[in-house]
Length: 267
Image (cartoon, rainbow, N blue to C red):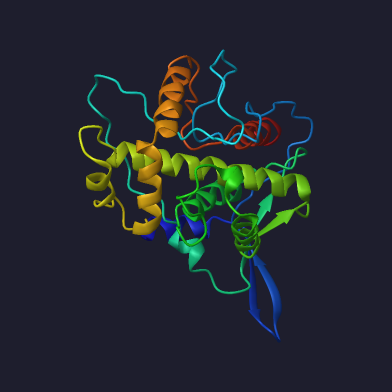
């Protein structure tokens, strides 16, 4: 929690002190600058998040348009790396009502700077909360739009965008939520799916306390269905073709460009 609070102190936050005092802005962050002239685009059909793998265009088997493939780890005969714990972003969830983290957008409407990284991580935490993003829908397309709009409303209640958010940025945020939601379902499958067990055995052992048992049962049913098995096979084949891997950790491409431009002009 201390690390989270230290991170928050670096952010540009607009505080609403009280109804009488109005709005106060505090910031210790000096390098959140807009990038004008950057021509680097994200590499996905829907705005790609740069925390994961940069997805190349590959020859692939076709998947029905109403199905979205869950992220799955490629099995390797290597010792697994130690993974950090889940990013819960409690410092953002527990912000005072009216406080807003100010996020700069680049010329393409993409979040940049430390605040942009915080936004991305918060989106991941939203996508992992069953109250906002139920996991028992087989694809993002069939999830009721009310859930998506509620998630956007939540994000906009904690972040202020400069320049002001528009429809393009909202679509990017939805795409990011989709990406994180799919990754979350893939993480759950990596943790819990065992082909040697029955559907009931897997469904009875909920792998994470952020998961609703009833929603999880629906997800497990999809894993064991013929449709789910077919999609899983296609997904593994396609992922095995990827060669170029994002190696910048949690830093997004727009943030990386932003920092390079700042360093060039100020140092």
